[in-house]
Length: 335
View 1 (spheres, rainbow, N blue to C red):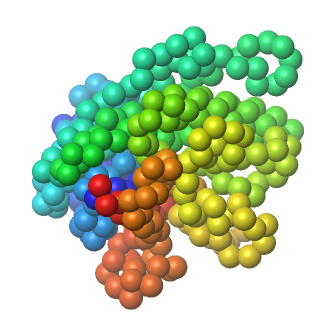
View 2: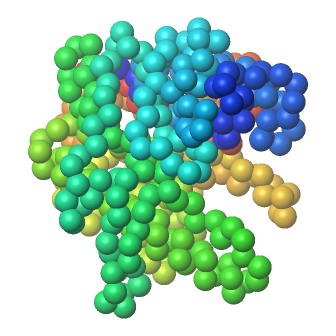
């Protein structure tokens, strides 16, 4: 089985209010990329990955007449993808849903949020935690509630899957350096709280002996910014379980955590206008529980410049650059 996580930058803008793909010559939300060019690039990438299931981060919107499931299934039909059915969980207000696009011949999938408790609520609820050590409970919500799924493979293997997109730390709306610092620290606290909440759900699943895959964009990574020194750890380390409990594993995260300097894997590429250069970062992960590490797992980042097969295929290389500012990560499992 091959699963993938893919953050598609503003996928929503490629569809009209009737959830129909609009692959025309108008501009998409990507810089100097038309809707047609982005859509065709995404079609090439999805076909090349040939995954049994893709966790789509920043999937099309659900709200009003818009529906993420209908949009994704129309996209799959347009490009004749075998991942022809889609499923979402709790919708949000950001116009960026989390959705699974999958092959129904290979997988049975259902939305399966764990029942909430006072300590670990459902992901559409409110999580209480003291964020700033003032002995006062702070209430945290997910802007994009993680998608929890029960999955059964064609071979009969049952796993639990969680798709996540943690809050970005960017200080949007800041008007001064002081605002930047204040908002960045507040956003960092909220992001770490979301990671703690997600890890608490991971512990519940693992305590029940269920094989688990956690995948998506955590908007964080070891050594990514100066706030890790302030708070002592990254969201990735929290979700992996480095504070105790049964650990999850992702080889790219493990490589990044094992060294302070030197080359690291990356899954995204952003243009920094002020510095006139690209920034590359490791933001997207597929983490697995210990039992799944016995099922011949093979991870791959479909980076157009770093992956030899992607680089050797000019059409795929160009499609990956055109489609999104993130690149897919795939995991092959013998289950």
